[in-house]
Image 1 (tube, one colour):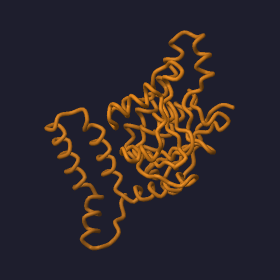
Image 2 (cartoon, one colour):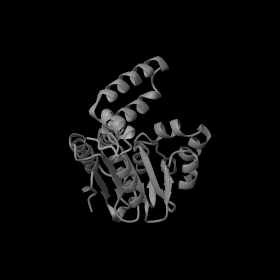
Image 3 (cartoon, helix red, strand yellow):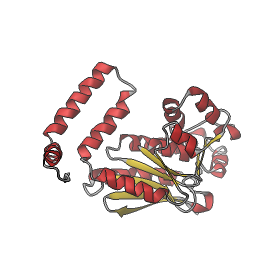
Length: 259
């Protein structure tokens, strides 16, 4: 069965479902372009306020398909490079996407699947989720930005346990370390992710876009440049119609209605 990316809406949330359940939702090149296209559509639609990424069935995503990787070894290296480049394009698109993206994780979250979850703004994980970067177990190295995200989120010793030793890490431990936002009972990650999305959907989209851009850029620039960026975003958002609505609603003790 070929992997595919299904899309449907729940209120103002676009739900993207990785569909390859026979192989624990292993990724493939056909998914990457579909993921980029779906986010481009979501970005241009005022009806979409957030995105949830989930796996079909019992697992989030088992990462890459090793049979496909083995077959690619018989091809010129450019074939594999093109495939990983497609994955990286999707990861960068998620990172730059101006609306909240939530990963709803059940079961296996491995390799590039773990990288995909790390690219999201929030991770909601069931207690039975299994997070692992097993690349070194088969003699290869990470892709999908996993090493980048983990190195920024975790202590170096923990990153080496995950990447070099290929050890599993529990969702409870990842929550303690600040990587997983919310733990749920088994089978409840999707419902909790949609509840979080609904909370975010009620907030001013322009403000959330500014916050995501500021946080993304914070690690790479000096304080002076970041303060200038904060100033620009703050002034624009204060003078935006949503800024006026939010302040008025607070002063009038009513629920704001953002556009």
